[in-house]
Image 1: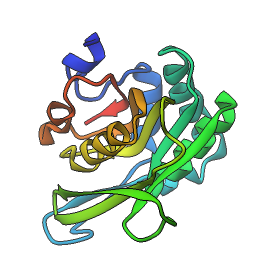
Image 2: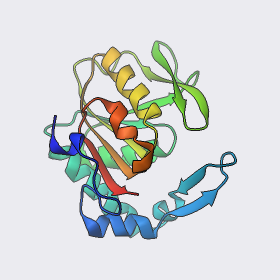
Image 3: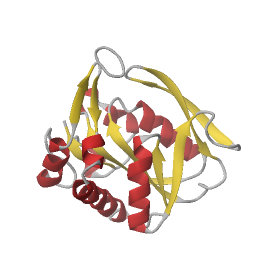
Image 4: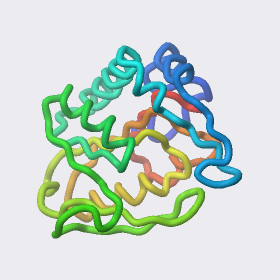
Length: 191
């Protein structure tokens, strides 16, 4: 287990340093009571809409992934994780694999149900492209860890070797990192 996997970074900081954390923080929009009452949604659209800021965070995540060794595939979790993963894969010159909501990928697939902070869902991965591949898993936010845990389980079932997880934002008080079993988690901003 690496140091980044075992310890939660200090709130307001992140894996790539204070400047990147502050950049992301300045481009997030809080949306109260979305998608349901009591949830404070962290909207990344302002960050995505700023080309220079978006490029900076993609570079930071791509550098983090590359530091873990060769990356053959970047797996992105639907839907915002797709955007981030595609940009990272392009920067690294490797392939991309989508992790989608159940029923959206053609068979054969592997499927897993999970719980998130406001309900339940199922995701799936293609069964035939992940065997023995070194995979960097990406999502926008690590909250309770349900989605990322389900994705890690699916990737393991597909015989992929997950080398790390990268997220723009980690919501530390929800303790999602603790559910991930020691995988190297690199969060650019921790709140």
